[in-house]
Length: 49
Length: 389
Image (cartoon, rainbow over all chains, first blue to last red; front, side, top):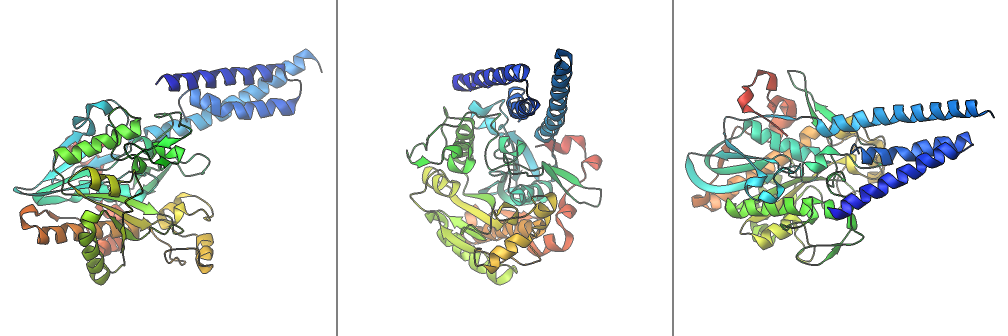
């Protein structure tokens, strides 16, 4: 259970980093990439997939 | 580029992502929470929860329904396990046919439709499986969840780098720590999948089960197919059933010996750790073949695939495959007849442990009338007789 919680915290941290990079990015190609790779992290955080 | 335009662009990107998230999320949520009704046969005398045999899984997604059908006369006890691998739908649907139709005159029949309910709430990651499928009936149709081979990572996560099976200490594939057919006999302080196996093992011990029949389907490129896999204590029974089925029921089924050194599987561990005879049935399912084409509901239900046919022409299959495919009615019919034949042979051999079951269709009945004919309409049933998987 503790390991599972740690993994959810890690997932949240990585999702935060992706969103941070999305906000900082100046290239639209990078923004699309960040949006796409963010989805599975959010789906796991929201316990949907 | 102006800051204003940059802000608008990021906003559009974020909204696009949110739309994708909502559509995907709704689909995954609906699939995970789809209720599958079971209209109890008049033969069902009790419905228990698996946690009544091991409280460690109480309140979890795998606290599955246990349907008990008892005859008036005492006799033997048979356990049917469906949904060990919910990506093998004929196995689960066979248990539906039993729970909605079977009447037991003597002995006891215990049926579990969703042994690994967690695995029935997710499809294979990256596999592009349909989330559900519908069996046509005279009253419209009944929708079922399509599942996966492994427990849902939402219920058991993360996987370890190395999975050491308990109690053999054999090293198995890491992902198989979520595979119900690699975690038998289970342990009370293990993962959800291990606890579920432990609960099933406890059920077998407490109910003094004589024969466990674990229902499966297999890809045609896998050598263990169209067969009964038997623990050594059930080999004679399986061999006799194989011969009689192949001679009388209209299809062939073989026998495989459960390898003593391959651990975690029901046909090995249940036989080793309980007094029950453990058998596992495999039916052919082209949907699971790696060389399949489009992975859709039609393939799941009709079992037709030109790429698997081509693989057969190259000698890559362990079962015949032609343009007729392997429709789900054929696969379910095979399971029904094999179960009935095993029960009949067991009862002949052990009169004091007789189990008499009626109202269950055989192979030819399922093919002739279709699986949907044997599913009951929940809209017309007494609400007290409806349970959900």
